[in-house]
Length: 102
View (cartoon, rainbow, N blue to C red):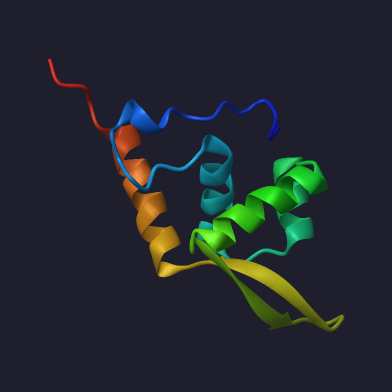
């Protein structure tokens, strides 16, 4: 799935915080709750190597952070949206809903 998604042009809306469509899908998935890399990969049908690179880029850009979670099986590390990640996701969604000017 990740390979099928085309990268959006950064100039399409002229915004500084524009993210790729792959990043948008990950941010959208994390909007509901923190997920582990494995859960993200399963939900998105993503190649683990590609997903790893994407997550690294999202972390460098301050859009996601790791968070430790305790479960029935033990501790695991999940990813969650940062405040910046939430703002970028909301901004992307608002841009998608805008009607073009006539």
